[in-house]
Length: 496
Image 1 (spheres, rainbow, N blue to C red):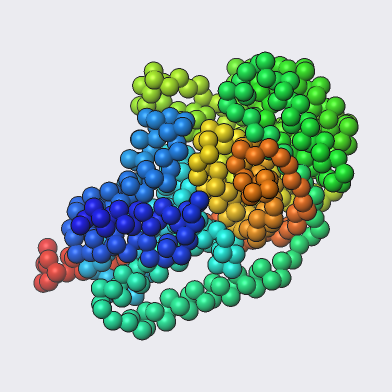
Image 2: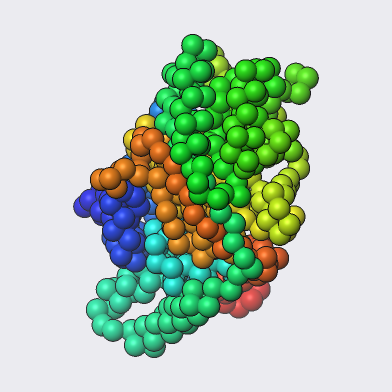
């Protein structure tokens, strides 16, 4: 019965995410787990929640095994601890807080754990509870204040209300009205924001999706073919009157500065199209290697370079190398060097952008730093060929949507194998590269469109994760109150 409860919660939560996207299930997916751990001691609740977390992450991010099997197992086992810690916190607070306080505190615990998960040891901010709602534009606009964590809070709040109602076997009128009022206020805010949509002009961007497999990418004999395909897709947008053309991450193989042939082709294409081209490749400076983006001007000159700041653990560097160095014996891994500058490119007056490489477009705090630096819109270049035709690119897109909403910055995404898309500042997906049947992954093509530019900075851009810090404060106060109650029961006379 315990296993079935954990499996049911994990299963319902998994299908909330792409590709099925039964997002409505997220609002009660965790109820079976909550019923399973209700009334249990902290250690039992910890173990049951760990099982649920392990099942969920194994199904949701099993695609990591395409990069490293050992890393995938370790990652799933590690991430499950966050579910387990929530279970232990639930067991601690549930009997010690009154109904309304625990309805408000326990979602804060979930948010705090998601925040830690997104930052600790480089962080893994994918498959957040709030991400399940990425297509519901009215609901997610609150992220421009709270970040994605505010949406996660709402979803967990409803899960807890349903759990408490089920447990009480009656309608909890006061608590239901409170939660309904919160949801109504959030929805009304979202409706207002998405109906006005104030912006300061537009920029027209084209993105290229060449579909180059990993084996082809590193085959020197395939370089002319790769260049020819990308250039051909670029030239197909000749009559689109573009301000910028974007090629994917590592779109051209090797170290660009060591390949005169590649540089000649890129410069010739930029001059021919008379449009700046942003492309991804490796850069070498002395003994250091960088995952970089290069902007080539209409005269064929290199206008600047951005070096990726936030590297992928187990992909671009080995975290805790003194401890995990043994992995290097099975999967040799050379560390890239992280960039140190929040680079902002300019292609015309009032059209400034920053580049986010790979999964940097899912990192809210990193994105807001680029917005603070003066970016009017974002560009993401990525290569999700590592994950074949799995759910990974769709999960990547979910996180990107929230980075747009949080900062009210549009985003142009060029993904080698998909999903390449244009997203407006309020999280609406304007267009994607797809074939006639709507297939988005491993489909060769290009797309273009106008992106609204918003220069006003959101609350989240200015102040960051204030909402999350308030959640930590809420947990601390609840812990102090609970500890005093425990102390009072154990020592009612107040004597030491």
